Image 1 (cartoon, rainbow, N blue to C red):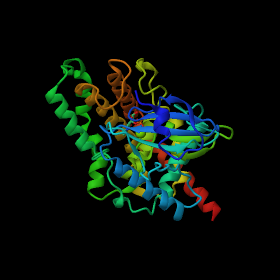
Image 2: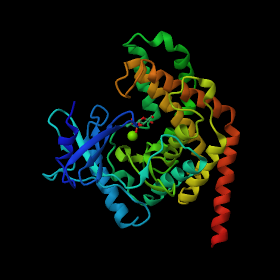
Image 3: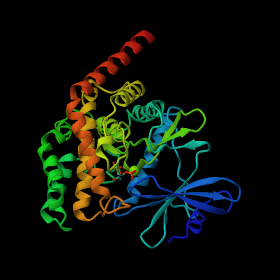
Length: 366
Ligand code: GN1
Ligand code: MG
């Protein structure tokens, strides 16, 4: 067990660390809220180096993005700033393979594990759309890929096949229906990646992990303050950001719900997010807008495959708290995919309608 207070004291923080509590929100890193004797609070994070072997790449991406936002995007998008260690490094290496970093807790902020109202979801759309908009002129290619092939669906399928082939935990027989489900949809799932490769969609600096709990909201006003968890900011497609947010936030149930009857795509939430995202990011080109619904499909299927691959490989990547946790997660994603397939035309229609609403408003404002 790491001495969290001692680690926090490696950074120039205000006061002496008094107590801490773990915030259980992500599946990868470990996050702690540290309170000092002055009452000032900090967020201390342990970076999982199995997932992020190149911590320097993460920190350098983050500093490039912050300085860009402080310059060109100034005032438009708030961002958390990490604090260097007392000896001037941008993270603390504990000598046991652990990398730690800290930032000051944003007062009066909260992050929701799920949208408690459609307004919350709308606010998260404003935040992620605003983030994309603020970075529209950022040179995406200058960013490092913090996880290689992160949303390369073709590669995700290759890794999935390798896990099937190896079947290292002897779990394959029990997940045949899920495996068949995923393989049957490979072409459709990989469509966006192919479009990216063919240059039919612009590559942007994207967040790539746009769950609603990666947005800080003001406790009183309910308005979005900023997006957090920037470890996966790298070159990507706007449809990934849109799609991942839908995958997580427009579902009627939790990502690990075991009663699949409760899992649906909520089309009203889909609409609310589409509206907020398009309003906040008017710089998307036509092909990007047309790819949004496909983004939701791709990100949901890809995430389901990632959970299934990890289940086959013995749960090495995503943290779990019960034996079939990753399989349960995979099943909710596939249930959402079935729902998307039966409501595909409506999804596309919603995107079209919301896009023309945004255009109408822009014309009126001119
Ligand atoms: C992971 O740890 P968290 O919740 O921020 C994962 C995302 C998945 C998500 C599924 C670096 O994000 O890609 O969509 O779990 N992050 C990484 O809930 O793999
Ligand atoms: Mg994350």
